[in-house]
Structures are given as C-alpha cells and as structure tokens.
Length: 233
Image (tube, rainbow, N blue to C red; front, top):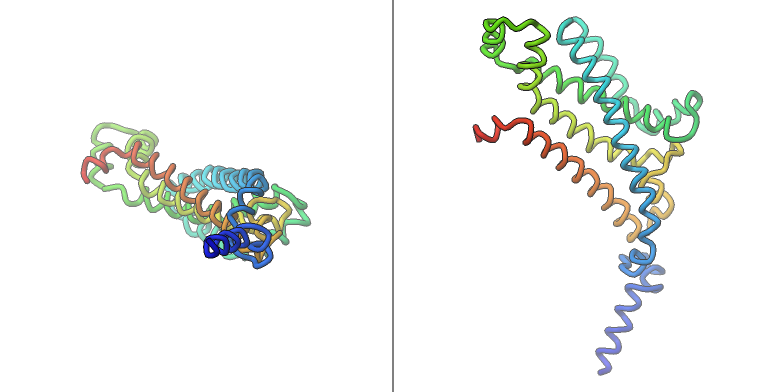
C-alpha cells in the first residue's frame, strides 16, 4: 500500500506542477495547453503552402521559358541559386525595410528559397524525356506546343513532383524561423518557451507531422497522375 501511494505521488509530480518545475515531459501540461498550438499550426500551414504555391508558379514558368531558350538556364540558375544561399535570418531582416514585419516578408523570403529546387527539377524532368518519345510525337504531326503539353510535361511529372516535395519539406523547416519576421507559426511557440521540453516536443512534433502530411499528399498525387510507373513496377 505504501509503495502504491509513493508511486502515485511520483507520477503526479512528473505530470503536474512538479514536472513543469523540473522542465520534464509533462502530459498534463500538454493536455491543458494544446489550444495554444492551434493557431500557430495553421499559421505554419499558411507559411508553407502559400510560398510553395507561388514559387511553383514562378519556377514552372521560368523552366518552360528556359526549355525553349536554353541560354536562359544558366542565368536563371545563377539568380535563384544566389537567393537560395542567403541565410534565412539575414533574408528576413534584409526584407523588413521594404516589406515590414509580418507575413509578407516571410512569404517573399520563403518563396525565393523554393525557386532553385523547383526550377532545376522541372528542367531535369523535361531534359530526361526519351528522344524516341519526342520523335514519335513529331512523326504524328504534333507541334512544339502540343508535344510540350501532351508528351514532355506528362513524362516529366515524376521529376517535377519530386522537386515539389523537396521544396515543401524544406519550407516547413524554414517557416519555423518566420517569427523573426513577425509572421508567427510554430517557431514563435518554440521561441516563447525554448528550453521547456514539453513545448519543444509538441511544437517540433507538429512541424514534423505537417511535413509528413504534405509530403504524403504530394506523393499520393504523383501516384495518381503517373499510373504507368505503377504498372512498370
């Protein structure tokens, strides 16, 4: 009986005020404070989906232009590569005089980081289309535009979506620093209680979960739009 009582007291200390005071992993604290992570989680979703969507539209357009005019590949790769090498914290601070504090600064910076990844993968996918497929399309009388949309892009989809997956998971991680631009997100929760284990586990775990969910969604889309890959497997 005495041992049971001691065990109950120790369990209560680990999950209650004693746990918080000792900076441990506190299930009770997490259960009582889960609501504080709801808004930051959806802010993090916004800070991931919007930059990736804008970056995809820009990079995809640039890749189509460069596919037709190969001399553009070098300059576009150079510019997007230079943007990608800027440290994220410095990028946020550099943009603040122009865009101020808030989502705009974070979204502009995060969008720039997606351009190189997506551009390279689209170009690689278009270049990897078999010459036999293009020769067959020309033999059927397809124009360059028809061949691009009916042959080249469909065959480039796996490489294109692979780049989108990389850009998405990378953006989830970089968005954790968006609070430095005044944009919120899960990074703001990590900054508020940086050394509290329960907070780190929950905020960090939600970031990992978001990256996994988005990656799985894109992978599912890839499997649906590339049935020939499943058939060959």
